[in-house]
Image (cartoon, rainbow, N blue to C red):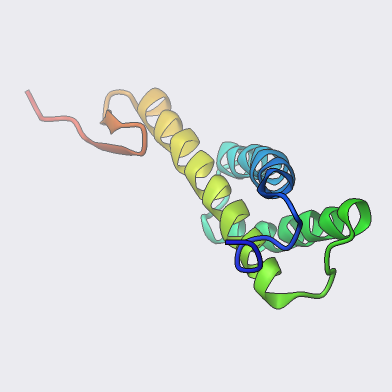
Length: 117
């Protein structure tokens, strides 16, 4: 997997920087986008600078390649996945609490209209 997903000597650096660090920041970004009732496309738009920041951390701290399209895309996919998941979790919570008379939760990522009594 080295060379495909990450370029460092250890996979732990990839997990630490991209998954843990970038994932946490992306989770918070997706959550805040949903909390302010913004559309989903902003999750993808804000994932670009987040992935660039993660790529810069790899470059500045661990001698990674700054301008690597392959590794940028890997960082972008990870960051976007975390952002999208948190966006959907937060939006589900919003819809089911704010419009509790209309919707009920079907799981962590979805809701449906309540059955009419």
